[in-house]
Image 1 (spheres, rainbow, N blue to C red):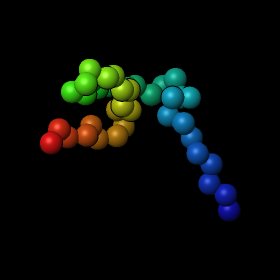
Image 2: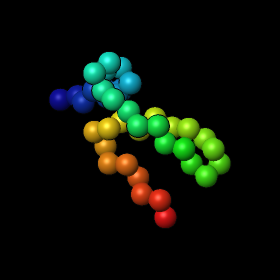
Image 3: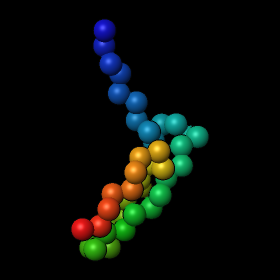
Length: 39
């Protein structure tokens, strides 16, 4: 049995949160995943 990787950016139904780190860099984070905590 083979597993196929599914890119969350390929599904137009997914929604994303924009994260900004302390360097001012932006990332898209899928809403179905918990947002990482800030240390």
